[in-house]
Length: 167
Image (cartoon, rainbow, N blue to C red; front, side, top):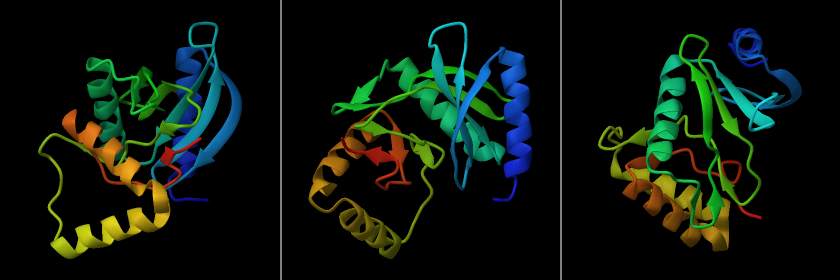
């Protein structure tokens, strides 16, 4: 079990109760939190809830979703972006719409505006090399997606095929 997964799962259960949602199924866990599909009596009928391990990651992802909502961003270059449904600061949980590929997911390692940490040139070179390896012939399209996000003040750093999914 990932460190903090049990606590995040308990926070998720409290979020379910607070929002009167029903658990549909477990979607997965990763370095930032646990994700479940939920069912409600309201729109959207099915949504995803991510419960975070650390407040800083929750805060970054919440703020990116708030920015994208403010800009009415539903997709970037034909890639769907989940829409923020609700969130709870105390429970470190974000509820969002479910989207299918092609899509962009997981903004916990995204930064807003000029808040991006400084990295040496070698780190950026490695990041670009990994992007090329991960996406091969689709790397140019991923860079175009990242450029659009950047034009919205969103710098997505955790870029891999699990977070930018092609059809």
